[in-house]
Each structure stands twice: as structure tokens, then as C-alpha cells.
Image (cartoon, rainbow, N blue to C red; front, side, top):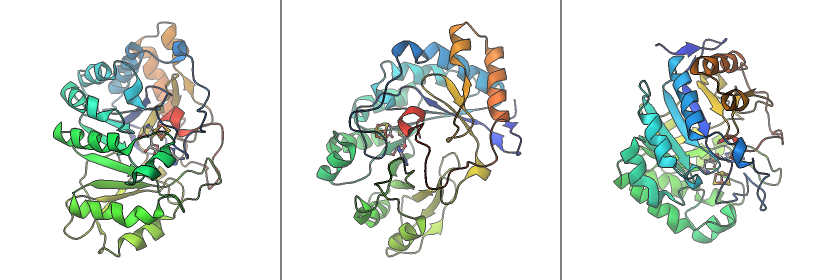
Amino acid sequence: MPGICDGFQRGIDYLRISVTDRCNLRCIYCMPSHGVPLVSHQDILSYEEILLVVRAAVEIGMNKIRITGGEPLVRAGIVDLVRMIALVDGIQDISMTTNGILLDKYAGRLAEAGLHRINVSMDTMKPDRFRRITRTGDLSDVLRGLQSAREAGLDPVKINVVPMQGINDDEIKDFARMTLEKGWHVRFIELMPFDAAIGLIPADRLHHEIERLGTLEPHYGLAGNGAAKYYRLPGAGGTVGFIEAISEPFCNRCNRLRLSADGTLLPCLFSTDGIDVRAPLHGGATVHAIKQLLLDAIAAKPEMHRLSNNCAAHTRMSGIGG
Ligand code: SAM
Ligand code: SF4
């Protein structure tokens, strides 16, 4: 079945699924040090329920799935979920966003189960700084995870970096250099200011810094879902991407719905309310009924998000998966 358009003629073919609100890190821009109030286990969608939503999504023409969190690799049985999704006829692309801490253990099994590609968040290449940003993490775990992901054939492996003033902004050029030296695909994600104490770095400053290494040429063709703009430094095997959700929103290219771990369909990253699929699923809803709720969420997609530089505090990225 062909894809489906929303009210603004955008094709919606991509579902981002947060499988848990739990995480083994406490990144300073995402969670307070004591964590966030957690959804109770019985309110988290089961894998069978998630699969039913995926089947309904495919029936209305969606074909790309991203698994995210919280940290998706802390949920037991995650490889089985990937395998179940990969077996759904019509799914063309399965990806995951992870902090990489457990990736060394899972990369091979994820690839074998049908995961195509992976994004790994790593905001610094300095071990001490990594510990300060994540509050608990060990950088060497992530580096081993990256290596295992490549060896497992996940392709592309992208590295997500959130540049922050005075925290990791001295490493922007170092990350860009890795696209030359190691063929890394590095994406700089504009900070969404949930915490006013941490300052974002405007994309023009990132460009300016990186262009000390050479002219950034636009690059097309890296597998992805449209939020990032990609460039390449002369001679680089890897790419530099920019995601500017706030200063230059990609709303006109928006192709996605989000499903939170507790079963809320979100028409927009910044939606203040969503459409509940958990109660219908708990009540035994059919694929047909869930299809209608997906269509309702698509119909509710706004033309643009209304956010400028002050994010609503009601929602954090750990609950909706970025
Ligand atoms: N735990 C996984 C991880 O960190 O990759 C997946 C979930 S995390 C919420 C998804 C992405 O959102 C990560 O790349 C993270 O850096 C990003 N993120 C979290 N909070 C953010 C914020 N306030 N602004 C920009 N990006 C953020
Ligand atoms: Fe956890 Fe990812 Fe949020 Fe960091 S960004 S606290 S790894 S959910």
C-alpha cells in the first residue's frame, strides 16, 4: 500500500517507538540526577502490543521503524522485538538509537535479528567528561559498542553529539576530524533547552568551526529519515550532519509519528497531548481499531511545532525517545 499523507501533504512513513522510559545513564540535558518518575511496568506496552501497532502502521503505508527509549537496550528481550518487527511484511527499514553502553553485548544479535542501522549517542571523546555529562557512564563501553556495531554489519553507524556551550564545544572539530580519519558519520543535534543552565551552540558556529578543516559540501544518499542535513569534508569517508529542531525546524519534511513507552501516539515531538493506544490495546483492540488511531494521530499533526527556545517542561526526551 502506498504511504499516507497528512493534512499538509507530507508523506508519513516513519514510526519512532520508545520501548522504555528507563535508562542506565543520566545525561545532564535529558534527566535530573535522581532520574524521572517512571511509568509502572503494567503501563508499558508489551512487545505483542507494540507489534500490533507496527502491523497497523504497515497497513496504512508506514514502512520505517526506529526503536528508542529511554535506553532501548535495557529492556529485556529487545532482540526478540527487533526480530518480530523484521518479520512484518512491508517493513523496509529498522533502526535504533542507543547510548551504546550495552551495545558490545547486543550488536551481533541485533544485526542477526534484522536491525539495519544504528545511531549511538556520544557527546565527548574524553572519558572524564563522558562521566560528567552522563553522570554514570564509562566511555570505553560505548567505544567497544561502536566497534561491535560496525563488525556486525550495521550500516550506517551514526554518532549523535549534542554540542553544549562550555561543556564539549571544544571537541566539535575533533568529531568532524573523525569523519576524515575514521570515516565516522557524526550528527550534531541542537540542544533542546529543558535546562536553561545549559546553552546550545548555533549551527552557524558549528559550520564555521568545522570549515577550518575544509569546505563542507552537501551530501545526499546516507540512509536516514530526513531530520538531518548532511555534508562531507573534502576526502572524508564519513559525513557531518546537523539537526536543528529549533533554530531551523525540519517540520516541512516531517514524516513521522512517535509512540511513547506508555502507549501514547504523539503527532509531534512537542505535542502536549497525544492519542492513547494503551487502553484500547489492553482492552483487546484489533489491528483495524489501531489503524484508525494512527490515522487520527496523522490528522492531528500540526504544520509546525510552536517551540522557540523554551521547551515545555512537561515532557523530556527520555520519555519520547528524541
Ligand atoms: N538513550 C538513547 C540515547 O541516548 O541515544 C535513546 C534515547 S535519547 C532520548 C535519543 C536522543 O535524544 C539522543 O541522541 C540524545 O542525545 C537526544 N537528546 C536527549 N535530550 C536532548 C535534549 N535536551 N536536546 C537535544 N537532544 C537530546
Ligand atoms: Fe538516557 Fe539517552 Fe536520556 Fe542519556 S539521552 S539520559 S542515555 S535516554
